[in-house]
Length: 601
Image (cartoon, rainbow, N blue to C red; front, side, top):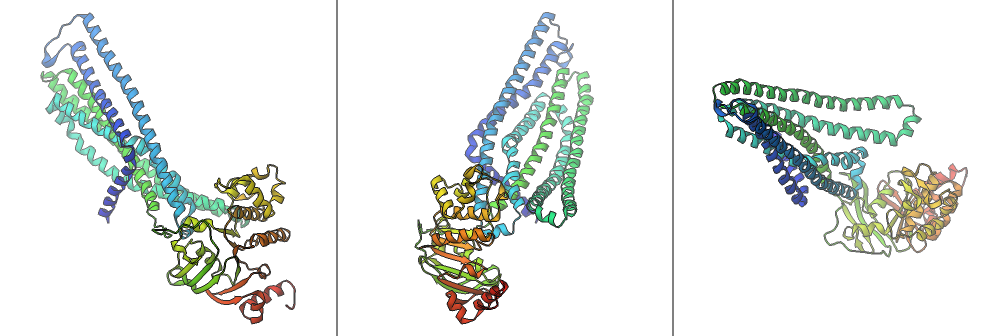
């Protein structure tokens, strides 16, 4: 199991690097700049060593005295100081240039990843969203993608820089003195051991942190959306306790992370002091023996300091890489999520429908062997209005969802204009079917944007016309900003009836060939319903319409009524025909009739 995890991690990093491939030139440029920076940084200690040996020490190489004119000493020191300052300035501007290049490339990569994640998210079937908390999905699109940003903008190239610096220091130190180098390198195995342990512990913590953040976001999203229920039942304290528990879990993971770093960083510092102590002990002896110069000690001391800087940086960069890996696991899980509703290899393009619909022996279940529809067959002719009635769970709403192909059936066929809906291009299928649901969702923006829904082909005049058609203009025209009135998320500032009227206008603006009304008038008051019914009579004319309604009084004029019972079609006919049969429909109608205070039909 562990081996599989390691293999998966390798594939994970390869996959992350693929996103950087289109910007390879940027990364090559940054690496070239960093190579120059590394050379200059490695040259700086050499300048200091030369200054000490040539101008500040009484002894040159192997203890031989060096006597120079004091003016020459000053000029020499100033010259070396000027060169050192020049390297500092050049390094500053080169660092700025490579940071700019990497930031540009990194932001483009993150933009592309975020677009890919959201695009894939929008193609997933409704069944995926019913089992996935919204807060966790939001975390993947925002927080998790942002966690990758620093990896691309700094880590990838700076890891190479740290490696270049380490290799350069080792080679340069060996070229100065192999024996003294080997003494100071005795700390390297311990550093590698501590870093390996740190990496493994830190990776587990990062995975837990990403998971806890996702869970906390999901909790907040769910309870903010359901805050009205929380307050109605006065369970604020219980919810707060649950939030405290989730928050505590996240804090504990962060504390583990801090604890891990609080051990690793001082350990790294201890190794630095140990290496310096080894240098002073053995290097001092070698200076006294005339084997090396004081300048060499200075060079080694500077290199030892620089040696531990990239190691510390590598640990921090490793931390970022692990955070990015943990985030990318979650992102790729989402990108790899199977799109249950797949486009046909050669989809049929249909700009408009005539409006015939046919179910042929359709079987469907959300869960295996728990059939919601059982061998359902019926036919709707173009322009007909068909109503579906039955008890809750009979399969009425499921039929509407299957026609729009939000789910795929297990057996049978669904045909529109004689073509299997699996063969019709999904975008054509859905844009030609207008759905008006009981629960209306409005997006933040204004009324016009909620009717247009980003479709710029719908003009303002068409929006006004559709609104007047469904009598939505009656209340919109009384608003302060009319069609530019601000809408907050889900349109909570509007009544249920007003939101429904906007939904009707939205559907009509898209000019669908087939209409689906799923309890579309359930939340509308009697006065508003009169206006809606008037509009419906007009928009249903010469347009195939499927209606789901519990109030049977709203469907009496339908061309045909289909009675569903436990996933099967049990009765078909007009209102009067079904009443005459005295079956399920008759019982339902009689029950509703008596609830209104009537004693007979």
